[in-house]
Length: 223
Image (cartoon, rainbow, N blue to C red; front, side):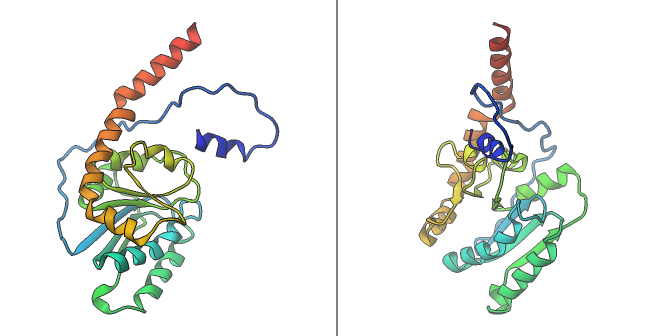
């Protein structure tokens, strides 16, 4: 697993191990209501969940959102549930971008830096158009699983851990080779990607698949 080998790179010394099939996490708390998406063809609502830290990559999001704004011509609204030391830097960068463009094109943002319950997260997830995280380091993020379960189109940084969600070309992976045309095509087909993400979740990361993996490894250990 790429994320496992990234973890090994942080450890001094030699570790002997035998490679086994991955024991992926699965979500266990589900929405209690049928939350509805807010629909506006001229606006894209992005949602991010994490911490305002360098590893979570929140400081990379403002410039990416501006890139989306330019190549799609749509208004951008970013909702992020996060707190941490980079909050002021993130706000400052968005304000710097907004200062260079006309008022009606400016990126609207809302930083939720206080505790909300999990159902509120699901509500915000449901109401957004796209789930977005640009981690520098990721270890199979729970919120990405939740976004897949909710049938959301997803944009992630192309790093170890994140790439394990991309089982069927179902996620837009952000790297140095990503073209503006790739972003525009993804946005045009985001509903298709959202449906594909739910199918990938059911086929690979659902609670039933979670149980199957653990039953299998337990059987192997008992042999």
